[in-house]
Image (cartoon, rainbow, N blue to C red; front, top):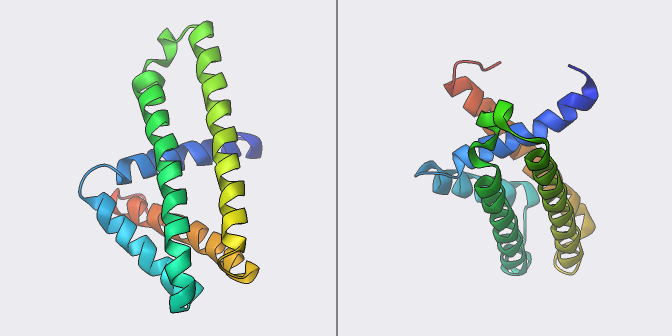
Length: 149
C-alpha cells in the first residue's frame, strides 16, 4: 500500500475507532481520560482552565455533530461497496469533501478562539496531547483486539 493510500486510510480508521468508542458506556470513560490527559499535559492555571474548557467543549461538540452526520450518511454504505453506483459514489465523495472542509473551518476557528485564552505554546502542547491521546487509544484498542504491538 502506498504512503498516499495510507494517509487516506488513517483518518477513516480513526473515524471508525472514534465512532466505536463513542457508542456505549465507554464513551464517557474515554472522555474523562482525555480531559485528565489534556489537563496534565497543558498544566493549565485555574484561570486558563476556566476559559479553556468552555472553548474546548464547544469545539468537541461541533466536531461530534459532524461525526454524527458522517456516521448517518456513510453508515453501512461501505459494506455494500459492490452495489454502490457511480452516482452514489460521487455523492459520497462530495459529502466527504464537504465534511472535511467543515472540520477544517472548525479547527481554524478553534485555534483562533484559543489564542485569546491560552498562550500559543500551550496550543501546540494541546495539539500534541490530542495526537498522543489518539495514538494511545488506538494502541489500547489494538491490544484488546489481540493485534497490539
